[in-house]
Image 1 (cartoon, rainbow, N blue to C red):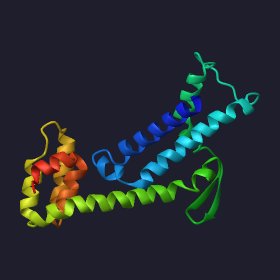
Image 2 (spheres, rainbow, N blue to C red; image 1 turned 30 degrees about the horizontal axis):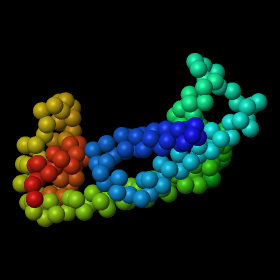
Image 3 (tube, rainbow, N blue to C red; image 1 turned 90 degrees about the vertical axis):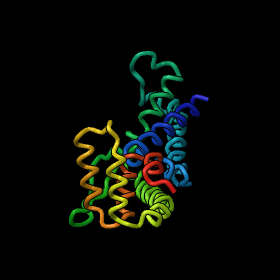
Image 4 (spheres, rainbow, N blue to C red; image 1 turned 180 degrees about the horizontal axis):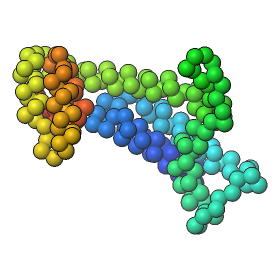
Length: 197
């Protein structure tokens, strides 16, 4: 049960980190990717496995802190820290100009993480394109799309956010680029409001 808690916490933390840092406004496009779930489950399984290995490593690994003798607290600590621990590199070996290969626990992560993150990114792109394309066809005129996006900038945005969004919208060369830029800042619901089908 404690290993499940460690795995569940790692799974949740990994998912939360990915969607809040990389896809904060377009989560729905990531949630339909099978590889997103594979990615977070791998970290959950690793955390559960690490927790199960703790008794065998009790002479080498100790938990020090408030109530750290409690198995639930240990499981929580493992779940919260396993992703960070897996990115420890002892040193890097140069494999060419500007290219290095890490040696340490991070070597294990390189077996799956870069490929999976790239696949999640491609799934996100495909799902976002499927969402944006019908809107771009309906609002095919660049000026119309720009006007709709500019009129839909939330008042709650800071001046810097408004300026950045306006700049991205004005630099767009197609209505699709306008909608994608607007989507990146405001999310799916606001896009549906500004660009109704």
